[in-house]
Length: 351
Ligand SMILES: Nc1ncnc2c1ncn2[C@@H]1O[C@H](COP(=O)(O)OP(=O)(O)OP(=O)(O)O)[C@@H](O)[C@H]1O
Ligand SMILES: [Mg+2]
Image (cartoon, rainbow, N blue to C red; front, side, top):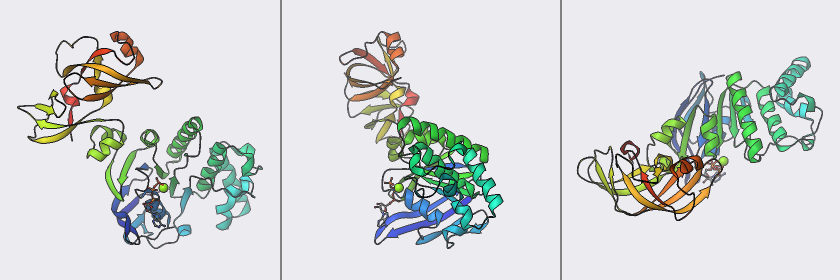
């Protein structure tokens, strides 16, 4: 267990800046997620932390140690990658023992630690098998056990779940999260799965083109996005361009006049989250930001429906509602339904 302090970290590949001036403090025992589009520098950052890529600029400290120039095996970091990377000719036991043998841990201690690590991921009964005799999810748990067996200060995981099917992914994700909490091990994981990122992390680091766009809890990134990129990347969003009108009103380019909390004058963009849009059969009693519309498209997503709505006054909005909610309002969940939409003024969020 240790904290991590990264300051001014940078990496160029030739003239291309993969990571630039990245600074970040990770708390002891924290579960931090790196999130961002493909090619934004997540793996490069993680590999610099692990010591496999040498940074062109900046420093990395783990606890009190400056490890910037230290080779990977001196950093005491546990690593898990996307493609399990187990040794195919070694048993599960020997795979987990690998790092300990390299560290010349005595046999009795080694047996203890491997046993303990396999117990943690609930695979003790498969210790004598070869990797190919295990399912994908089991192999990935072995990779996690192998990383934990060395009792690392920090655990780094690069898309460890992306080869698993949806159900297994959820299961291993939850196991990983509770393991991380019970061991209290400082963990950094890369993913581009938003839901995964939001559900396991203490904090998220959202990157784009080699820089950090925002660091914060899932709630902060969702409800207080630092900029348009963050708002667009996290969750679904309606963006509306327009002009601040008189008082706290905003006129969209599509022609809607919205009551907002905007104080800034001039041309700008606001966002409305789809779940903030209320659908009713009749106009709402207060009639605030209430508009007539027509459902153009309706997609069933399991517990929720996603609806594209053409607003009579102009423009198109995406809304999310539960089938029960629609049923309660007497709205048929299909294209063509005539409805009213309304949005509280606090949910018209200036960017
Ligand atoms: N060895 C290399 N030589 C040149 N360019 C590289 C090298 N490794 C990575 N890059 C480039 O650096 C950028 C960042 O790569 P990186 O692997 O860190 O992205 P990532 O965020 O992990 O993406 P993904 O989600 O696809 O895994 C990419 O544009 C990539 O093409
Ligand atoms: Mg990557």
